[in-house]
Amino acid sequence: MADLVEPRNNGVFGACPVPQSRYDQILLGHGSGGQLTADLIRRVFLPAFDNPVLSALEDQATLMLPGPGAWSGDHAPTRSGDHAPTRSGDHAPTRSGDHAPTRSGDHAPTRIAFTTDSFVVRPIFFPGGDIGRLAVHGTVNDLAVGGARPLFLSAAFILEEGLPLADLRRVVESMRNACAEAGVSLVTGDTKVVDRGKGDLIFIATSGIGVVPEGRALSIRNARPGDRILVSGTIGDHGVAILSVREGIEFETVLESDSAPLHDLTRVMLDACPSIRCMRDPTRGGLAGSVNELAAASGVGVELNEAALPIRPEVRGACEMLGLDPLYVANEGKLMAVVPAEDADRLLAVMRRHPLGRNAAVVGEATAEHPGVVTMRSVVGGQRVVTLLAGEQLPRIC
Figure 1 (cartoon, rainbow, N blue to C red):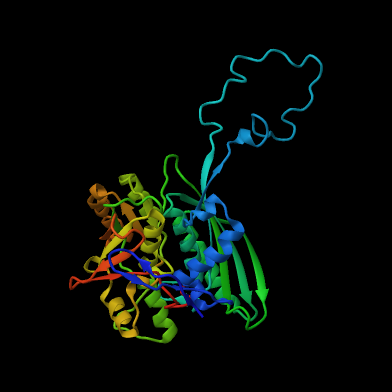
Figure 2 (cartoon, rainbow, N blue to C red):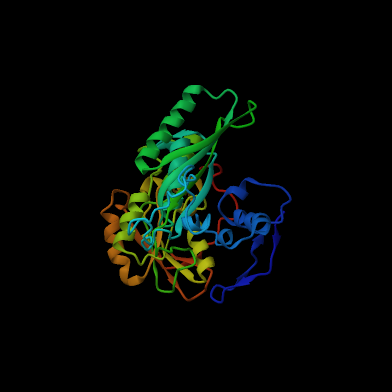
């Protein structure tokens, strides 16, 4: 069972006990992207693999690769035969410039972004996408929101005995098209098969590598009081689309996943507004999860405006009918951006001119009050605390 830890007093909303997981086995909620996920990372994975890059808990690891000279002496290794022994007397003086100094930057370090992800969505085909398309988009987006240009992917397929080969071909074809759309190459992979009944058709694990331009340093720790928080479009579309298929719920209009590659949207945003402090794609745990991570990492409070949240009427209606909160429902083609207040309107206009940002909105701001706590001003003027998801609203949605 979950124990209660000491009450947290934020100075504004009083004190209340916060549930803390003390489970001795894994629950579905540990994959929710909420509080149980955070507890699992903090209690198991960070102590085992602790290092500054991992501990930053970004959507991607940003790493510095040494320049070529760092690998072997002052110069990069040469091809076999480039310096074959010569006959006596062959060392005539060289022409001026034959060994001229290298240009500045020839041996400069390269910054790369590296991310990994896994996908267990059920069903594997759904309105607006499938597990293969989702795997490519999810990996590309983790790189893109870090300011990187995605380049290469890997994919490992865990297949269940009995999976129709036609379904596998359909997933692979979808991945190929998604890679072409995002301008990335899938360059390595692996395949394993598990017993019938032990794998639920197909699971996919991916990794991605991209290049981070010099001088770009987006981070979840960068938010400052007064910054504005934007989202690129309607929230909750993906989670509700998955649920509608899984549970056989029919609506007057077809709900589709928002799965999409965000690399071009992030490019135009950063070109127009280099002052962007942070971007995040609010997948598991929804927008609520992302803003809570922001508040905790940056040491700021966050105030959301419920009236400004872009939510499709059919998604809102489905959430009301099923008792779900759209703030916690997953997205797969949306991003959250944090920007100084003076640049918010300009960034919003740029986002709305892009096909994937037509419904962008400013939904909140960072504040010096109640650091680490997220609140939301309701449409009727009240205020409530928005915490991390405590359990699991919708398991296996990505």
